[in-house]
Image (cartoon, rainbow over the protein chains, first blue to last red):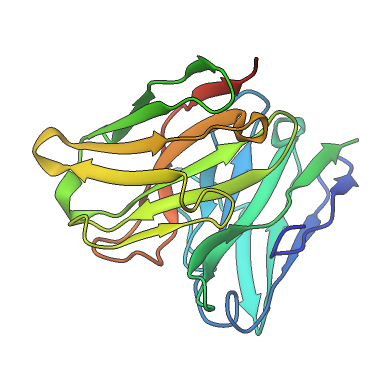
Length: 111
Length: 122
């Protein structure tokens, strides 16, 4: 059971928009920045969004992040078949046992 | 360019030990916290451990606390993960990753290595 909750899967057609949610609590998302990672099968995770809504150099603006209270969201617009991957949210949890936490991951299918 | 390279994985019997290494380059290694994150076959990402830039602070996931030890040698740009009393559920690809911001152990993870595979099996 992951500390952060993500839907197991989402799907949409090419060109459409998809939203992936990440739900946490006051000790993690409510207190610390959220990042999002993209992972293709057999590959290492890649940072897509950091500090809730910032994109690293080279990440297209089709990917955007937001945060509100104890939840965060990753939006992907203009879907491409090459976006099919697993997406993970992550943050720091400042509870009694300080720890980095991740969501369970969301598999994106581009129909 | 920033690079992190893990090594030391392999096949090991339950109860035995293994030491993983993570060598960083392309950045001022001694200024950044380093994490270990693992991924079991077909599963999601699981955080394992974190070491502060100076090695003074260390944090562990409950699942590995007391069995794994993280350390670093900034003179060699290397972070280690000593894994003792290994169990079959430790089987995973182990990644090391650096934080985005210097001296910020709560920060996001920007660069990841390619991972090293650990299999615990008799």
